[in-house]
Image (cartoon, rainbow, N blue to C red; front, top):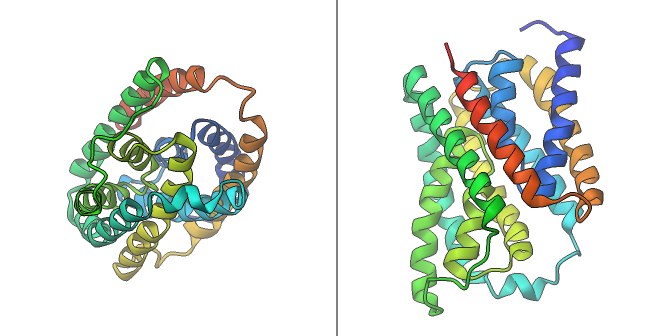
Length: 265
């Protein structure tokens, strides 16, 4: 791909609103970037996945820095066992997910991404009418929490590395419904869990030569990463002003339409 200023501009302009909306509803925005990378920026699904994972790394680090100090550490310490177990499981499967995505035929990878986007779109619509809340169905004993955390982490790491997402779409509901976490605590814990998972996935993609061509890093990852940081800051300011339920309904519909149109050919 040639070095084109208009490409960088497009990547940046898409990244800002995606990060704003993602921040407002508690997601990293990777699921919304996938249709942009494939549809607007014309990458193949196989190219889009590692690029999306790279942007997710920038977004997660920025979000952690923005949220630093906003939540007492003792709130996270209560979830120390499931957080550690989720990280362990996710790291193990993240490497496998990157390998699987590299070996899947293009049409199978596209079908997997489309199914994931449709599922997340449906989940957002459901959450618009039924806000996330829960008391946790996993027993409070450490052994149960550790075992369940590893199993959930295996699934989350696989999805994260295969599709280039941070995994918050799965981590946050898991922490709330399985372990009874508060939604704000779950959001911060999700970022902590996502960080090592993304790094392992990126390492595996790099080993497989996904970043041999550095042009996409300059033309897409850098401007989208910058836009994501700016958008995250704006989203933090707007939290509490815009209805999260309305945004989830709207974005769920948009995501479903995008998933259908993204691979319509």
